[in-house]
Figure 1 (cartoon, rainbow, N blue to C red):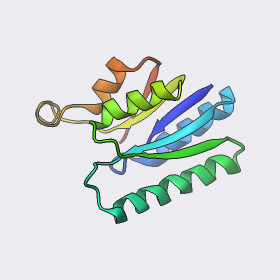
Figure 2 (figure 1 turned 90 degrees about the horizontal axis):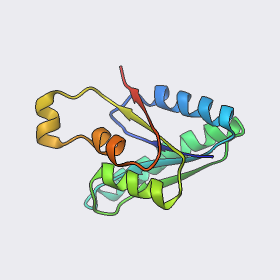
Figure 3 (figure 1 turned 60 degrees about the vertical axis):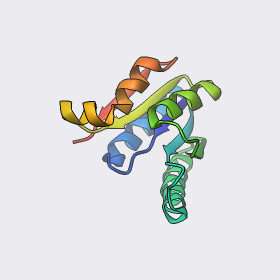
Length: 130
């Protein structure tokens, strides 16, 4: 089994990672920790994202869960990038942390969660950040 865990700086990460670790251990799953970045993201931001992802990777591996890290910089919308990557890696489940957005926020900025849920080829487990 393969699980993609989407990392977001603005979502309470510990809740998402704790759930992902629990599911991975229950299912004997391999984890892909993924974060999307804009093509114009400064190098410092990308390095910081890699550090954070590697921190979580180390925590997973200390618990006996195999894991790899991917920073996606492919110039497409975050939701589309996550769905595409999941399909490329033949992922069995996506765990996506989300925060509550207003109706106007969804209208103006779109909703990555909505795209992932509706377009993914596999089940999506959303974790609401408090």
